[in-house]
Length: 153
Image (cartoon, rainbow, N blue to C red; front, side, top):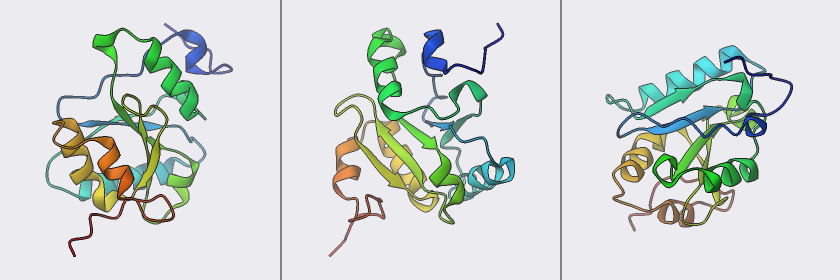
């Protein structure tokens, strides 16, 4: 089925793609620089020896906004809902740390924090197996809204 890219994916009533088992959905929403997208994926893949991401780069998700993602997931069948998504947005593409925008789609829909590639495997693994909740990472974010690990002191 061809998708008209002049309107957003939400206008087509399409649910978000399902991530592969034990991975997080990394959704590209900025399409201005293919080289930056390649660098983001390389940084995420280099952060750990195991795969933690299901990458989706479909132009129909260009400029998708948090509120629209939350609304779309809330309308999806319960079996098809995902609990979080990580956005590779314009800020991600420009950030030397390749910080993704983590979005809660379940417990506190719309709550966000920034996630540098360095911390991506830890967060993805813990969220994927429901070992930790989204809020635990969001609550540990610094003043800029970025998760940089847990203080051990």
